[in-house]
Image (cartoon, rainbow, N blue to C red; front, side, top):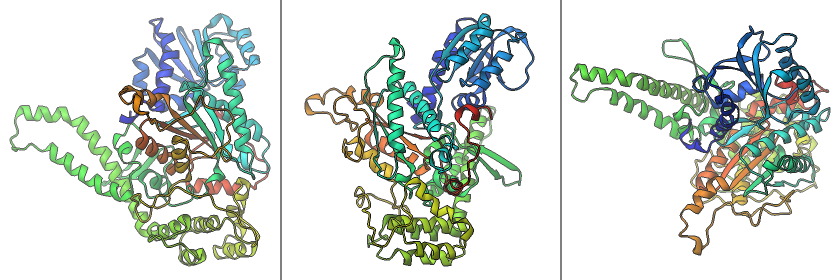
Amino acid sequence: MAAGSEHGLKRIVWKRIKDTIIADCRKSEVWKILILDPFTTKLLSSCCKMSDLMSEKITIVEDLYKSREPVLEMKAIYFMSPTAKNVDAFIADFKPKPKYKSAYVYFTDYCPNDLFHNIKLHCAKYIRVCKEINMCFMPQEAQVFTCDNPGAFQSIYSPNSQDKRKTLETLADQLVTLCATLDEYPGVRYKKDNNMENAKTFAELVDRKLATHYDLDDSKKKGKTQAQLLIVERGFDPVSPILHELTYQAMAYDLIDIQNDIYKYKSKDGSEKQAQLNEEDMLWVKLRHKHIAEVSEQIPKMVKEISASKKQPDGKITISNLAQMMKKMPSFRKQLTEKTVHLQLAEDCMKHFSNNVEKLCKAEQDLAVGSDVDGMKVKDPMRTLLPVLLHPYSTHDKIRAVLLYIFSLNGTTDENLSKLIQHVKIEDEREFILNWKELGVPIITSPSFFSRKPSRRDRSQEQTYNLSRWTPVIKDVMEDAVENKLDTKEWPHQSECPAAWNGSGAVSARQKNKASSQDERRSGSRLIIFVLGGISFSEMRSAYEVTQAVKSCEVIIGSSHILTPSSLLEDIKALSKGPMETFTLDERSNA
């Protein structure tokens, strides 16, 4: 696990599972079977390995929906979402004939009464334990979580959606389990938007469900903790998920086809290889937020260092030298493999960069920031955009540039938009652009309409690369929240935090000899941000950067899912499709 993730979400989730499910099982010394649904399979594989389970006396992990042989002498642990389909599958394991000696049942969330009675009715005599452990979110990284529900985007923003309210309810339930896992009862605030009501509705739901959760039984009763939860909608910053990013993780997921965090590549001998990009890979953790220029410089150096350390300084080969080398070999091989993977991935990124992306980035940055490298204001954004439209870039890249142009003006005229759409030759696919209105982003405005762009933090003194001048808006928000500078008119309180929330951990002079006060705040002061409609990798990076800078406040960011520019564009385009089958968490975990 990543060095920085002693406080990390994956570590916290695994500890919670050990303290509940595993602790109960330790009471009897026998080996057990663990049975999971698709959601809990993904949850467990995100935070532990099979060897971790084996060391806790779990002999085998099974799928709730696969046919399994009865093992009557063994006890089974069921860890699943409380859905009708899961409960039916569980009952089928004990009725008419039992498959296992007894069952320990753990639900990820609150189990509805009808399902609970159903279980009791059919399986009461086999059940030793039945608990709800409040954990139905996915710990994606040390400071990032998702609700594992990309379909939520359509449900919330499609004008034809049939299940918007139900989706918001489900996401709110999941967010409450995140707070419960972190043992936080935060004050809730949301970004006020005159065009959109989703953040307000969602904030009300979350606040109500948090209150219910902490009032449910006396053991959980607690007052507000030193944490803030901020809720924003995707339309609040349309620029960040569309720009070409040049930090390693964001760039790789944008330009290279990485599915389920698996990077596929060809090794030098031509064989197909694949690597998992996660926090088990320490090099990935170290490099993922660095600029590609630094990454390309650092990896070859590391490979040389390792190769040099392998060679014996005096060149003598003795038995003891050989033994030493043999001992080092597994870790040496692992280190070298890690570095080779990243050498290849960085090379792939740079190939794209030098072919196309470098030229695009200058125009994109000028449009996004509103000024050029020298700080001169972009007076005519069309002059910045035209060279991009005239160059044979891919249609997606041109659409991204057109969107940045429109965002920079806060909307354009109908006539101008038609010309742009002809230029990019997407007459039949204009939804890529028009559908942003469903997110409350102005696309078509009348020439007389003028809307003020929100003011940004002054970052003119910060060192940046010329092609990476844009800072995600959410980073401004994180810093303002930590410094207690968020405007209450723009960020109304759904519920207050205790006393004056001070995320920056500023300690008054008379307290300064309390060395531990900052350390205590490390876990005591958290800022949780939830974005309705997906988060981008640059926004995830911002959470780490602000935490690193402030030290006394941990920023955790989450959403229904993680976006790449292409996946967001496809989602935007699909908004105008007719009612489609949408998944809630219930059905999806068994789809």
